[in-house]
Length: 381
Image 1 (cartoon, rainbow, N blue to C red):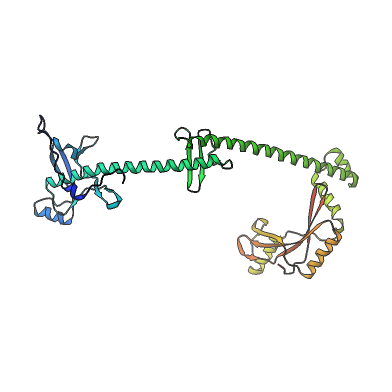
Image 2: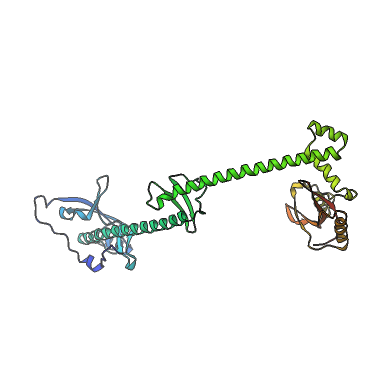
């Protein structure tokens, strides 16, 4: 690491006990607890030497005042020798912190425990410096990233902050390819501190533009609706029955009824043609009866049926003749053969042959009128 001085194992082992001048009170000592672990070999050696042979060993030591840096005192006033956590040099990866007491294969003497504590003391300081340097490096990298994102956002008017949570003049959230970035005007530095205000300004501008667009669209829809109502009223006044004209003058004729009458008039040349009937549920039920027999008690509703409709890419001779005939009868209309594929939602494997219909569309005033007529169900895709 850039700011950590390399410490070798040999140098640590060679560190002598700190010496201090003899001053009044130098002979004072502090009673501390030293906790360490014994391996199985160490537990055997402990028993041979008359010890208790336990894995966790605790000793009570007297530490002189000139070695107080080797102990730590918690908030409850308990003094312990600095044996846990332990610190080890980890090659090029810096210093490794191990949250466990040292383990010995033989009961250590007091000086060996002091050397271990001194080693931990030195490495702890280096470890803290290393962590601080790493934290500073991460902070600088994060600041650089935030600056890059902020400059890109501020320089591109098309960029927007996330809508949820909504941007405020003080805070906003920006989505990037590397993840989310939160900006706070109170804690960020320029140019990152300028992002929330700009994001909020763009957010409000978008809301105003959306509101204006919605009002414009609504006005256009209302104008179109009035145009349709006026066209329907004029058409009923000219072509409707006396009873329909009377209701229209009274303002109680439903526009849906007027549209149906206009559609009947527009497709009058096809009035003898049968209409297409959406009977997918009945057809699926018939298929289930064929599979399970007449005793089937399953009820198939329209909600249980999935229908996929598309324009047929090919036609049989009979279908082509019908389409050609419809186009001849209504030259201003758009005529297309539609194929409807029906399946059962509970079991997509249960399906029936596709159904066909001839969809006729024609523009009459402000209305686009559509009506679908039955066609042959011969197999065609």
